Length: 140
View 1 (cartoon, rainbow, N blue to C red):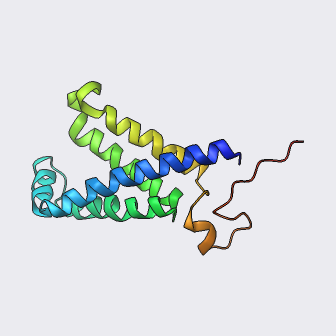
View 2: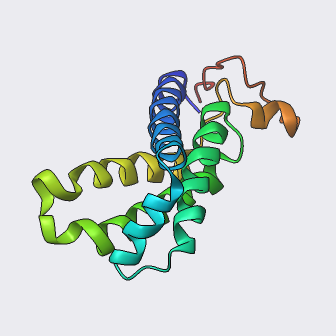
């Protein structure tokens, strides 16, 4: 993969990871019971609040570290689609679900393209390309 794409993917990975980490942390710190109540008010089983908050918190950390990036990105897409269709669709695009769409786009990019630069996946799974170097594609 080309150097500029990897740097762009790293930026997306860090911003996406931090965003989900903060949102997940807020759900736990603010009292997960509040989130459970909110889910219940939407007709979503309350236990799903624990799953969503955990995906956001743990997934945010994993994405920042570059571990299981594609799997976590797919989970983020599912969480955001759930948020749109259960809570935000009625509010419309502006002031409603535009932020969620941006997070879905970022997650979809990482799902399809991955992100190897400064990612621990390459170290943990001993990939040929190192996680800490950018190599230009050879011209053919």
